[in-house]
Image (tube, rainbow, N blue to C red):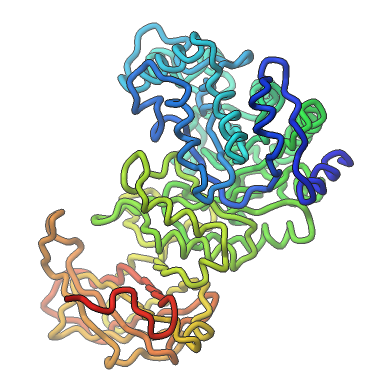
Length: 568
């Protein structure tokens, strides 16, 4: 622990001298380029599975070194300081020249997936040409001054060779050991958690995972690892979760000892980050002793996710993990998933991402990042829009006056099964009958009173979207923080039937858009929106729903300064 504490102190004080490389990774030019590298701690991270938005899937083989490291090149000067790369797949194979694990597709005789076969061909070609794909990425990160964390799934997903043998994702270890699978359980939650996941209570499973993460720490000049502890939880039968906590804690404790030895050997900080569900009630349900990990300094930080990772959530509840880490060196990073599942926008817009980042920093987070398998809102490679989005994410000061769109999570329950983990409850959509009300909370990070006094606030709009609203008969009342919003600031937007280039807008209904005067501005923190259906058209036999609640905030660069003052 003294060694790690010393390295933490040095990280804040001085540049690193020339880094000593392991024998198979040294070169004079690389050592020279790293001599001026400043150690930092993760602030803005970018997670990448290294396949979808990368050459392994998108480029025709053969690949050159520059082709393979383009995924890092696009991060240079983007505002991203930490590259989290998925090196170890959930099925047990890896995408680098491992000495301890099977490489992607190495045990396949006949392929049944066209694209995944390409990834295998490229990996084999790079290795045959004398390159280790993971070493190339590590070297490029260090040349660019970007931290490189190698990520891997802690939970292995089993399967049978007859079904999965042509896909390349699964190793012989999972094929040959079906007895390690959790199997079917008499538990409703098992419908959402694969019974094929391997039981981490088995020492053989723990040893296999320890071997892979040890290699990522010791054989490669990574800046640490990310333990993906958020996918397909829990890592044991549901009725044995209480047994998992001490076992998982000891495994991480042992991995920490490996990291400290690697630090001494490479003179490089070796961080251990854990990706976990943010909600504190989840930890006990899945067998994670988070307070112990913090008090014993077993991890250097947490990457916190929502209980349903692949859905946009701007309001991760970070209060508990921030409180537990306060006064320690353990960092808290908020992970953002940008998938909307919406008709017009598949991915979160920049103002939505900025709103999520602002909410995270307002709760005391140390950093923020994009945690999807790939971030491609405008396709790949990135456009200038992606860089404009990223450049603000590390600066709460710049985010303070960035345009934002706060969106209350709203999804059809029947389209996406609801997770059994705490924190996944969706307030909307919600059907109302005449006389009924619905209250929802919307977290807003902005200090609108301050910026409004300086003339910086251009507009604040609260929007509520209703389905099957009949404007000639139906009547609703909308309140914000206990005050009814006046009709004088209301604009109704008709979505009864609108044809756009993507087709007819759905669901049918209306948007109530309130342009809020300063006395109605939302306050920093949670704001209560209450909708009451006062009267309903008795002839309409369709549900009236509160479908969306949004708050849009736009700023000026300076008072009376408009970006486009003349339109003709």
